[in-house]
Image 1 (cartoon, helix red, strand yellow):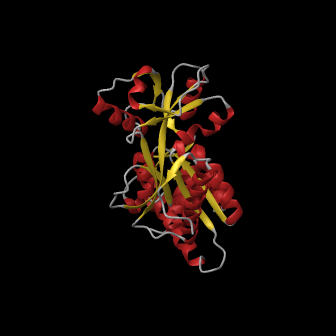
Image 2 (spheres, one colour; image 1 turned 90 degrees about the vertical axis):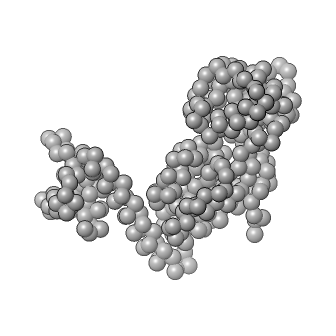
Image 3 (cartoon, one colour; image 1 turned 90 degrees about the horizontal axis):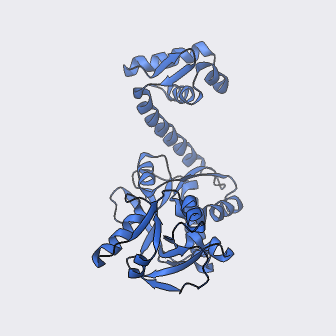
Length: 311
């Protein structure tokens, strides 16, 4: 099996036909077809369903595609690591961000990267922490910001900040207090994510010891949709203070911190212990941590910094 065959296979999978892939790769269509056939013969499995509409990966092809992409990504990382002996840091770095973190931090991270690491191309992936961890382990991501506990035998995790949760409502005639006791949540109709969501688990686990029964009027997984529902006065919600800082400043939402040590979550920077980082990934990791610390110090991310001091 050759790297060339893996590249050809990925290209055909993405293009959906030999014709389109051959044009993209600048390889003759018959030669491309022969390489795909040789790969199928070596693997002993049909990788594509062929029809007049093109070529679509079989179930075996979909499984092989995931592995092929990881292998090619590792080869690219190795190539960039060798090139990193030069003074200029360059290459692609894939970073994963949970939705609430992405909302706050994507633009500042991109701006700092363009300013300080102009030869680095960032790929930002937004998803739940559970998915980000899986993609970090599989090699699809170089680093990720995750919520949760630092203990993980597969990942190196650096705690960065503690995000305080708040009750978020539409503007009201009577101002909210700066903080509310946790039992007060029972008095508010709430729009929350589903029970499998990490944020919802924190809320439920904080309320359970006190026997609190929350009045959940709707479950919505999308953060923008949750905010719209709150602005439409369908209900209030619980979110990190930073996730609504812009709306609170604009007066379109109000927030009051929830006075409970259980109503907080840690943001950690995670990397894969089994995959050596490229120079670009190392530089982006340091940049991300510094940007987040500056956001906390400047008040644009209302949180408590628990990471290492900025050099």
